[in-house]
Image (cartoon, rainbow, N blue to C red):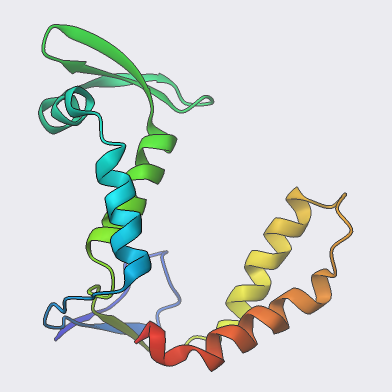
Amino acid sequence: MLSHAPSEGSLPPTITYTLSPREARNFRLTTIKELRAAVRDSMHNSLTEMFASHTYVGLVDPDRRIVAVQGGVKLFLVDYGMVCNEYFYQLGLTDFGNFGIIKFEPALDIKSLIEIGVAAEKTKDAENDVAWEEIADAITAQLVTRRQMLI
């Protein structure tokens, strides 16, 4: 078990968290197997090799999320936002169910955190006819009823 105090400016000083690593488990869920197979089937070998051995050159355009990387003798312009999205998707599939546990003391109020996310989405998507007031309650209820799947 690792215990951490938050760094200056990241969390209120009264909140601490504990990391509890767990032994890796092997899941045989059909949907996870199918998603992993889809990633494997769509894999581009040359692109995979380039990312495995690339050299970061520098930031090109922060507004468009573009960086330059060198792979062999070629220079590539890469949308690092999309690359991160794909990487974390694949990481989630690879390590599904094996992320360990982070426990906050005192416990965080999940509904308050969801309400923050809903408020952020509401400002981005104010034109849609969405019952924003009901969304936080619905998501909270869904997470609470399925909490055993998250542990």
